[in-house]
Length: 230
Image (cartoon, rainbow, N blue to C red; front, side, top):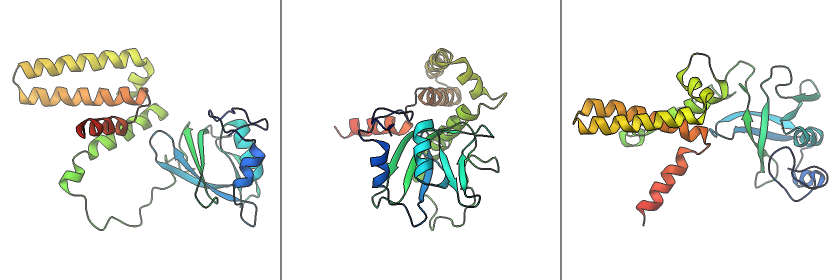
């Protein structure tokens, strides 16, 4: 999104048209509003849904943070202005019908007023068929990746992952190297229990490194798939 001159704005990427022209592509409803779905740019988790009007859309572009229109209070509200749980915008997409926005953000804290990470935490239905054991095989990697990303955002005191992110990339790299060496030693010792333990440590620290580098695990899996198809 851009400022009125069409140059790069606070959102961190360039759109080659002014805000007025971008806003003209949006199909505002009879009240001048459009639904805005907010998604965590790192984890891809849907955080919340709110409404924007043209003014809040413009202010969001200028601030680089989400600003919405409250239908109940009939006023603008800057997400996190009082709580500190702001949402830095890194991407904006318009759906195929032009009547819904997808706002990709890096949140500074929980999205929900309850203190939950997302407003969507009340399951009303379960899948018709439970995942097969093979489908569940790598579920722990997905769960671990999400947890690590959440730890980096919230930095809970006393958590080991917080310690790693606080110390920075050099500490994380050192741990990856140490755990790789431990895997080698375990394999040389022909100890299945030791190898299982050390391999788990290596995978965990590698996932922390990927998060620090903002490289999704899916990208690594896609690279493996690409090589497999050769």
